[in-house]
Length: 527
Image (spheres, rainbow, N blue to C red):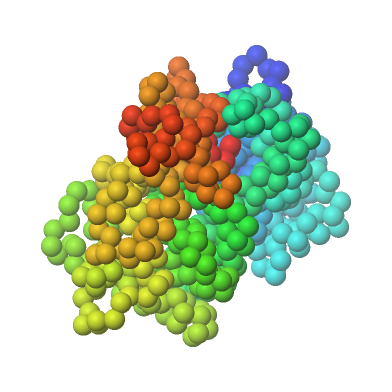
């Protein structure tokens, strides 16, 4: 994980503690937790107040306000992703769920926070804790802040362009992207196409709004899925209301522009593979469903079915699910049960019978194969459903391209598509697979290319026949002295030549982004 770098306004001679962000999370978590169970005069609570005040004072040495943002499985303090030690990962997940339950994107603490009364701070924290039980938590909390005239703290709405500009725009020519990397301002310009400044600024703002909305939806989908799984595993009631809403948000985005969500489908999380995999499968399934012309109602049903397709894995023993190396016959039989378990778990969700009936079949079918030679074994002779065929393709593609903490073998995206093509007509529906490959392109978004000049580049856009006529665009990856990479300029590799079976600029070979230790989404979305 990248460490915090000195913030742009820093004037101190000594750079801030690289674990400042982690300590900030620990301080706010301590205050939230102790305020739940202690009165204002309790000594532990007073210690938590003191610790929070101290970290606020420390942060305000470098900026006039403090922005804490929850997004895509992590936190950002100012524009920097918070680097966490392994023993603090559980804390971050707990706080992400806390923010999600209250529908809060982030908090902004102004300089005046350093001078507020302890009683005001505790009133705010108790309102924050209480907001979870309101119908519209963020709206209610915002109203309470206004009513109490708490001008020193604000809720951040990352769907607003103004918030985005203040949080993620560094105001300099360079800003961190990944692994200590930086991205130059020229990366915002595409090759030789340089539109007028006013038009470029407007386009950039619209893109930033779309990107941040997609990031927020992805994050909330993950927390929603985690919450459902946790509740079911504890034999508690779990609904799918939030998941339905989030999938509908995805559908709306895809109907307008599916490229942003395709960029997000490159996200890989080793610790939360099951959840990121399910969300990526939902995104890929929705994009494929959109390409074949499914309407919004069917897309919403498909997305929800894909989101819950592996829900049954919560019933698989961890030692089997996360076993390094090859499974033995008995272990593989246990794994094969997860399709049936997914159906059982969906049946237990709190939702109407019609809604559950509409999403159960595909999770049962997603390992049956196009030729019905997969599992679970069934005497059926009828083909698997359209949703089942779509999710099968998305599931296998994401699975074979995802490095996992217990499995070192994985494929680059282009090689995965080549392997899948060999199973067209047996495992995969040949027509749908062709549409899927055309959608992603010969070199899918996030693939690392080794060019003929030995330079590295990251595929930046899926092919768009209508707009770019199959042109391949990539982002140069420039190696840093510390071993990371920075985002270089956009480059045009030309069009596909069917006779030469190559693009204008020759591609020597491909790599998986994990080989370089990068998250493609951070480069593609300019995080």
